[in-house]
Amino acid sequence: MLGFGQVKIPEQWLWIGIALVLTLLIIYFVEKKWCERALASSLAYEIVLLFIISWKASLILLNLSLVLTSPLSLLYFTGGSTGFIIALLFSTGYAVWKIWKTNNQRVMMFLLFAALEMTAATIGVFAWLLDSGSIWVVLLHAILIGLLLIWKSKEWRFLDFAVWGGILFIILEYVYGNPMVLGLSEWQWIYLIVSGSAALMNLHIVSRRSEY
Image (cartoon, rainbow, N blue to C red; front, side, top):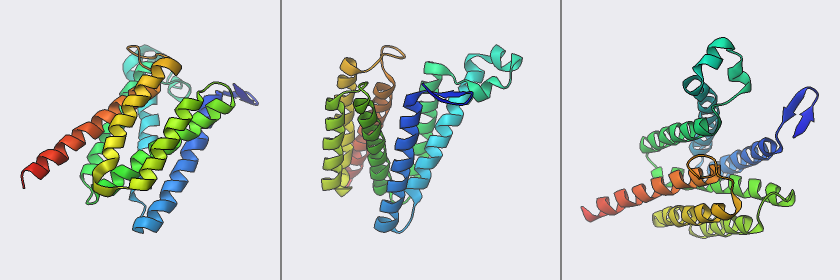
């Protein structure tokens, strides 16, 4: 726990904040150079903001009496573990809806998945340096990022990495993670939804190709 005067901030939140800022900057400059636009980085920013707002607002659904008694509790508290899942599902649904409306879905999905991997890798490095993470998790993130750099967005191959990489992380988290909701950790829920979305997109692409 880090203290700034009267304010106390969990160390993990600081790592996540730094990781998100670095990732958003990298994705912004890569996309500007690659596509001469910044749609993916803008969407990534919207997803992060929507997730935070949804996690906070989930407190209304999960503990309405607290919010009615003390409205300022929305500033200081979140919906906890269950609220995390609600916010994750809501922000993922928003991301899918926004991607579906774009013309270049493949590039958008590739950059967003790369952003997720860079964020997770940065958080993993911080956790490992502070003896609260695993070097194996960091190495797996590094390998996955390397494969993404090699294949880029060629022929939707990155969706296979999203599916199988997500499955590997879910398995690893059983060893190194902390169960949160229904026996799954935060990262397991994230990769369960990501790999599931990637698998559904793969099925959609395969079925669309079979029509031609």
